[in-house]
Length: 389
Ligand code: TGC
Ligand code: FAD
Image (cartoon, rainbow, N blue to C red; front, side):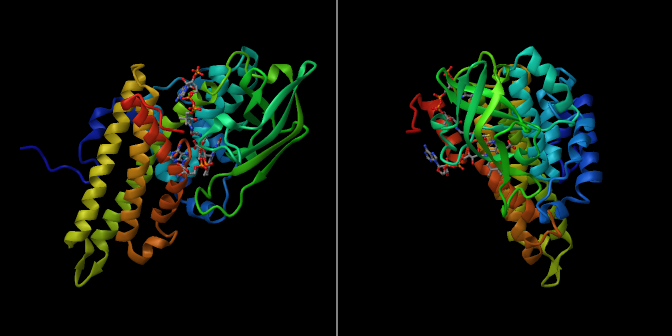
């Protein structure tokens, strides 16, 4: 007779991982338990990302974890995904820091940079000594970055950048910005050190979501950088969009971490909270909510693992990544909302992680391609018809 399934690993997904993957998961989970969970509600409340966490995440080995060489560990896609899940079980803002550093800024340099650019930036970004950000979005161009107005023009051997980027994670604490700009050869990528004259970053205040993450506006005014600061080969939107695949992949795992935290919190609460003389977990309507969470959490985690195995085999198409991002973030948000209701009034305080995850997931739902954009990417993949415009 097969034993009863565990409420915490109902489908036995743990058995689908190898020893190396379990080791990565357990190491990141322990870091989150010891370093993030005791502090996160305070960081969230005070709208703070503690800069020293960058080095600690570097030591943990999660910055540029899936990249090869230049001090990066070259971990598998599945191991990287598991690390994202565990970080986001702590807080989406902490996973965001690692995503932007590793999958956007470092990946861009690793994929599109010259050898000199890789030597200069990657080893010290892997340790967390240096922080990067990725500037694609602008105040008037979010879902449609093709219209960006930030421009770069040649002036002798140098480039001059002018324009504004908006909603840039890590912007105010970054040592280097990867900036995408229009040139007379199409969109190109540039590496702009934060000390460059004419470059300023302004914090976006009063966010009700991702409060343990720095989000900034970047302004470039007659900002002069040397000619070798441009990525040498890549032209056009495929430059930044290739980087988004990597970050979206981390998000599709990470969302299941936030969802797991919400499910486990709601389950525990429902078993101990008593109303009408019995635990609320005994009411059919509560069980329906918990079971809905159980189904979507397990399906989403299996989906993440499946896409991860496809990625490790070289078979993940960007549309597969959109499938995972769309489904898993949408379902994580639903799980967070259900969990919030199970906790009743206690669900609206930072004494429990649920409303923090719920608010964070509103940003995750919007960034890295909104729900609608991923719907249209999938719509085009199955019909062959582009419905963006
Ligand atoms: P389109 O004409 O379809 O494509 C232009 C060129 O790009 C290539 N391409 C891709 N390459 C690699 N990966 C992908 N996923 C790609 N998608 C397209 C394409 O083959 C083409 O190449 P080429 O060589 O033929 O020129 O472009 P479009 O202008 O129609 O736009 C398509 C659309 C709407 C899907 C795209 O613009 C899009 O994805 N928009 C959403 C923008 C977005 O996601 N922004 C995210 C900003 S970063 C962020 O949010 C960080 S949050 C912090 C965190 O991660 O924690
Ligand atoms: P818009 O594009 O204005 O969209 C508004 C609404 O219209 C959305 O619901 C959208 O889905 C819908 N819509 C748009 N086009 C269509 C269409 N064709 N059909 C149907 N519906 C459509 N960007 C970066 O470059 N780097 C970062 O590090 C970064 N970090 C971020 C951190 C946070 C906390 C947040 C909230 C955002 C961040 N972003 C970053 C920006 C993010 O990528 C954009 O917010 C996102 O791409 C959506 O753009 P937008 O907000 O301008 O919305």
